[in-house]
Amino acid sequence: MKRKILLISSIIALIAISALFILSRSKSDDFALTTTVKRGPLEILVYSSGQLEAQNSVNIVIPDKLRDRSLRINEIKITDLIEEGTVVDSGEYVASLDHKVVEDVLISAQEDLEMRFNYFEDAKMDSGLTLSNNRDLITNAKEDVEEMQIVLDESVYESPAVIRKAEMDLDKAKRRLNQEIKGYELKKQQAKTRVERYNIEVRQRQSRVDKLLEAIQSLEIKAPQPGMIIYVKDRSREKIKIGSTVSPWSPVIATLPDLSAMHSITYVNEIDISRLKIGQKVTLGIDALPDKLLEGEVFSVANIGQPMPKSDAKVFEVKIKVFGEVADLKPAMTTSNIIKTGQYSNTLFIPADAVFENDSLQFVLFDNGTRVVKKIVDLGDKNENFIIVNQGLNEDEVLLLTLPDNFDNLPFEGMDLYYKIKEREAKEEEETNKTVEQNKNETVQLNPLSSNNKRTP
Image (cartoon, rainbow, N blue to C red; front, side):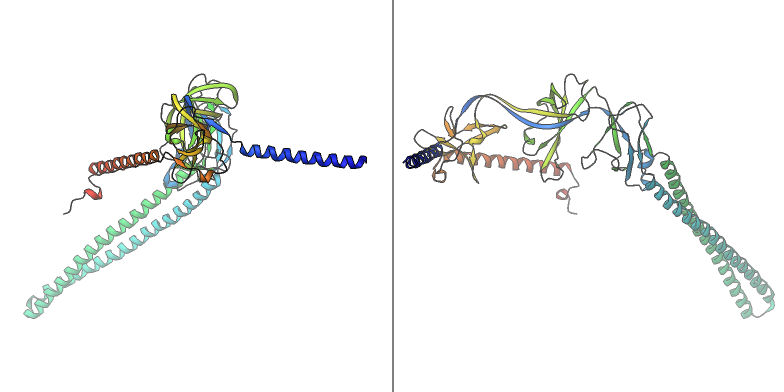
């Protein structure tokens, strides 16, 4: 009997639990998160992390001897570096560059010098031999002239035909002599030019070898003045380290910063960069000094973006000047930057989560008390959490934050505002195109060599 009662009680309890679960589930399905349109002050902020750098610094670069393009050393590896943050005195050791690269180039240059010197010596020997042969030809031509003159003198009592022949032979001998003399002068000039050309090449090769010998002696990098060593970043935005390469086009290895004035270098994504302007105020936090907050100001915004490493996204470099006490700040410290791009004292705004969109328009789920509609809104500036409402909503109106079950069937409201927005965007685009065209025409007028400004002859 007891077992039967226990079984019936268990079944009743199970039914009660199931009913409670079903009821609670149906209630949760009917529940929707809502928010209201607020009016009040709103700050538009852009958040970014950065890194401290000194505003002024002295660069430590590869020696001028290695930047000479005649050496033909495009890149050279760093084989040794002292630890970053080391405080050095003027003239103290900082880094070493790869000797093997310069030695290989030197060996090649010495071989080239030897080859050019041999060409020079051969040219001198060839010119001496050639000119000697030409001088012999001139001597023979002179003797022919003398011989023909004697024949002509002895033929004075001969017939006119014999005399005429002797005169012609003498003329031929004289012409040949003149030709040999002119040929000699030409050969002499050619030989001189050839020898001089090889001589110049020898001097050039010798100069390159001398410079390489000097370069080998300058592969140890020294500090130009006292300071703290801070290594720079290479083209891939990686810190210079052992194995990194430097070149005449990228010669900086490290800096000696002036720690009395600092700025933060940060990179802002292409979505937010349009909001940033020079002069905007910034609040900076120092990760290594969590209790320290500093004020700053944007003083440089890059016009051209650059790709982020291992990503398709583009970022723009922004420099922020740091105000206040910077004595305890060090280069390369990480900063948390809050850039104030907008300040509104009294404006309508809603949570960013309350805005929905499709391919062509933005809208909110507006609850007017009797039904929910998709209401078109004209939105303005925004920060991380909120968006300003220009038109379409009033203060304290209720909006849904979650999609109802009948979302796809909800009607749109405010299409007249949608058309106004589209009309305004079309006018703005037209004005932009006019400005671009005007600037293009002004550029053509200022540049008389442009293709559109050429005159037809």
